[in-house]
Length: 216
Ligand code: ITT
Image (tube, rainbow, N blue to C red; front, side, top):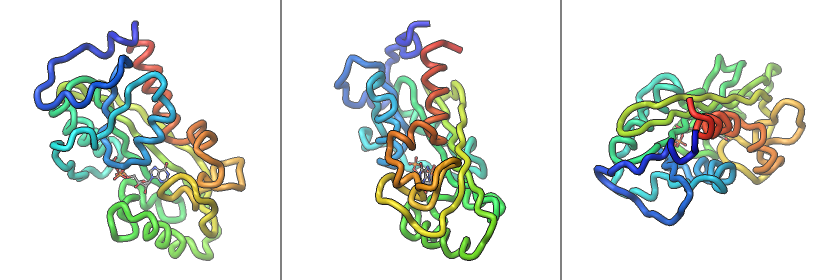
């Protein structure tokens, strides 16, 4: 199937958003600039990737789900009711075995303050101090929606371990504390190209683009 067939020029109820490109447009239902940037790095050559900041009137989405899929679905549907064309959401987080899978879907508010990465990392170090079992994984669920309906969902994960202390300046969130399997360096040290090539987000997104390019 032609890539463009996945992107019919649907009439838009609320907002068309900026139109700057001949590439097929994908609206990413996120206000997290780091996620949007990683997605842009990975597929920006093939898609015009807009994020929620391009649509100032979008409602705030309450993430009331208890699974990545539930929250990804809430975000994709909420944005796709307002914005025409294909909408992609990303719900992601870090699961730590020694913490029984926490913080998981609550990763962004683990430290007490939504989106405060420094506090999240401080709490992670506190809870993992002296803990021998350090296995963890990043998980990402992506949902594609169009016209207020779910089209498909995808997931990706990367195994690794929690480091004793932060290493490196790159990336975002828990990246300085997470070393992927086979590496002593953290995601923050490895840099975006290496991270994107093996990350939970990269793996989920590879399925999304394969789906978009091949047809269901
Ligand atoms: P949106 O809901 O607007 O997309 P958010 O940051 O609130 O943004 P989530 O609810 O999915 O998104 O929470 C994801 C959190 O998981 C994020 O804030 C980080 O704490 C962590 N996280 C996810 N992916 C990560 C990555 O690649 N590197 C480091 N931390 C990550």
